Length: 408
Image (cartoon, rainbow, N blue to C red):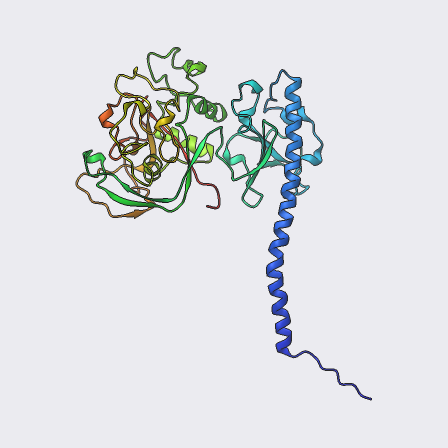
């Protein structure tokens, strides 16, 4: 008896192919994520072991971390531990040692949980696992190779997946995306914006404090930049030694130019805030006149005002004067650079704007906040706006940075 064999029709074949394609589209990303998760786990274990080796070295050397110039020779760890599965076996050492940890004693590290020891490295050694290049001197040396994330170990021994936080030890607060009425129209002349609505579409981190003498000194030591001259005649030391006095470590850096501030931000993997970002962080979505509220000025909440001693104060001295996002010292201490070029706004009316960045060119950079000798009635953030040429230095001018994690 003859049996008839019925084949698939074209439509049936296309349906099967379509189903397979749909299943592949669903499952392949799942498999890829699972594979990357496994690689992250392996990489974190590697860095945990390296961190343990570094801390054991410190215990054997008067609690002093190894010097960056010979850290990989001193550790002499198993080569397999130095290989990141994402980089492959062709890379002899896929990690970098953090330059700011070099030769530090454990006792002088204020926040062990924040001081990075090792991280995924951009400049990975391909021939020898003890390459001098396997040191992170700036944010450019870090590699966000794990799904746009950075894996790192820290002095307290923990390891984590991060978004690539700025280089250096900084505290940051988060500012939600939102709108604010910029300016006031009340006073301020050429320095004031008539009230207008601005909208920030991306949330961002802003440094909780102004950059300190200690933080700027670390930048100079890592990059070869020069520390500024002594900002106040009353401070001890001369122009070449004053910053070695630990009494000034927590004071805001002053006497740096906009160019130098921008160099620091670039080195840190951050940026100077736009004027709009700065104002949203300082005044909040309710557009407070002062960082803490719109009530009558309370001189006790300013970092310092007229006759405050003629100098700045350590950052964070007045916690009660925090802005809505938690940023400190937004009124007083030092003026703060913004990234925008300055524009004289006398008689001008500006429309509502989204993510404004200021004019394309100019001769001066916008400066916000107030300074250590500013009178109480001049500290309203709604109109306190000034400017400075990018190359000019002044002891009353400093800065803080903002950071938007990759992928946002």
